[in-house]
Amino acid sequence: MTPKISVEQRRARLIARHHLGQPAESATSAVSAMIVLHATDPVTVYLSAWARTRMASADELDEAIYARREVIRMLGMRRTMFLVPAPLVPVVQRACTDDVARRMRQGLERDLEKGGVGDGDAAAWLRDVGEGVLRALTARGSGFAADLSAQEPRLRTALEYAPGKSYGGTANITSRVLMLLSAEGLIVRGDRRGGWSSGQFKWFPAQSWMPEPRDFAGSVGAAAAGGDPAGLLGSTLTAAAARAELARRWLLAFGPAPAADLQWWAGWTAGQAKAALAALPVTEVDLDGRPGVALATDTEPLPARSSSAAPGAVLLPALDPTPMGWQSREWFLGEHGPALFDRTGNIGPSIWWDGRIVGGWAQRATGEVVFRLLEDVGADAATAVEAEAERLRAWLGDARVTPRFRTPLERELVA
Image (cartoon, rainbow, N blue to C red):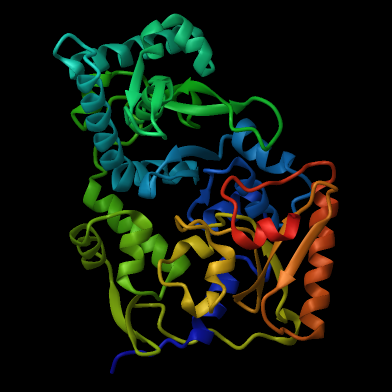
């Protein structure tokens, strides 16, 4: 008989595994519990970690990122920026980022050819520029984009995009080249310039920033060919094995769930997702009438919560990995999507109660954290939300948070 997993059981797993009830022991353990934290908006990683811990200040996460280097910024699933636990970097690289890097290189080569760059061999020109950047970075030890452009002037090559269109224009290839080299595992974003909301990072050779440096024995050409240029990933880890491991971790954190949600989250093809699941001990489950998949050891009901583990209010930031962990969200989102998501699928700040979204929040210029409940959750829940909003206001102090992707409710709250 196919095991049945109710919505209540899925929410119970979410609360327990995403630390929306019992706090995580540290910022690093909070990251690991979620597999990764979304880092497209630099503020998200701090607020996501805060919501799952009793982190006294942003300094605790900075210590893990910059001093102990326990978590690394990198492109990963769906060509999105994430904060990744250092031991998981090789898995994400092989499972997702290698494919992303190949597409990035092909796209930049096409644009260079269209722009007449490279004397008829844009691929060779781009490889040479990449080698120049690596030489400059290795000689310097580290550098911001402007520093590297000064030493490798070809980074300032300008390309015209969407000519004749109102949204068109010209832009230097600096950021595209640096992003490409990072996606290929050659360079890493390290120290930040400015406060914790800053998106400006210093670049380092990957082998010097990673917790266990390896000898640099490769080249941009090896990266473009799909090799392991920096020796960072280990010769025995295949893409198929990495995808299976990432699927296992996703099921531990986000399962049981529809297999299509895993495919969407990872940015894989249907074939890649199917093969990853086939390599694991999984079983089909019934998600209230919808087919799903679970690890074979994860079909039994979770024990009932004790009185000491009563529901709690949680304020999650925009792009938090919990609501962004599934493509099908009706079981925790209800009818609140239009208020909380923008037109491209980015969620804004959300309020959670008992494993589901019940409202949204925002911070005004005065520093006040304001919120709106989108359904009647009762007086006790409303009081708990108000207390959590005040706790967040006190934690933020003089800092001001404006999501990079604005959503309807967030805009209304700060108007």
